[in-house]
Image (tube, rainbow, N blue to C red; front, side):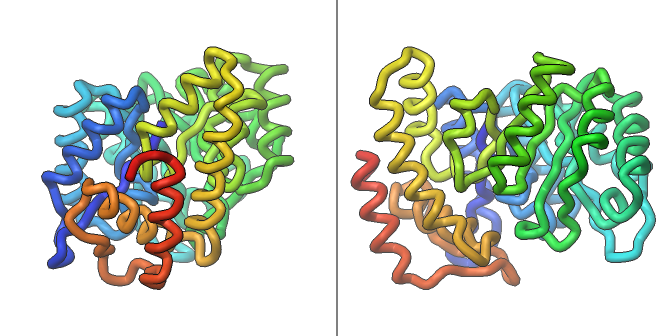
Length: 296
């Protein structure tokens, strides 16, 4: 799965034609598009824009997509289950699978409260994905204990969970627990600094994959057939990940916009007002990586 960047026009507005093209491009490469995620600036979108993204994803993919079910709140706010159910239902009504995106209300309570919230949400859905997002991405991010993760595995409609701690050991622990308790459960790595987690049994939902869904698909194909070319291609993609996801981590989205512009897939490298930016000197490094990947 690839978390799809939401491109902006030179004037700073959402570039809807480029958005539709990138969702289609991701699907055509063989990856499942993930929209309204952190890569898609879901925290910065108004309700109308979020719904339009869902409409486009549903139409382009015929329901073969996942999307963040996001609830905007503030520190100290209580959990708004009704809002989560409405957001998740909006995704499911278009055929997609909701990803229960963290919030202050969802992550601010006890671990038992987090599990109970997922149980309640899951009782109203056919399927959904959980989401552990570290605080390096958002201020309300939280990585839960293995006991809480184990409880999530008992929720039948929770078919997987994205894990974004950027920590191999924590992810290895989840893989071992998954293998013991529920082998069909998807541990979706969100570790853009260790994209070889697929070799340990993780699936993936990566923001890095939006830079080059075609190259990620080729990497996956090489791994599936046991071709050692997987390792060299993975190393170059990992170089891109280490560069783009350096602190401040959320600025990776500006690098993604630069990379898509270099590839002719975006009109500009603009990001929404308030989103962190990278220096223009990054372009030279990104161009070099694109040339190494054979996409320029």
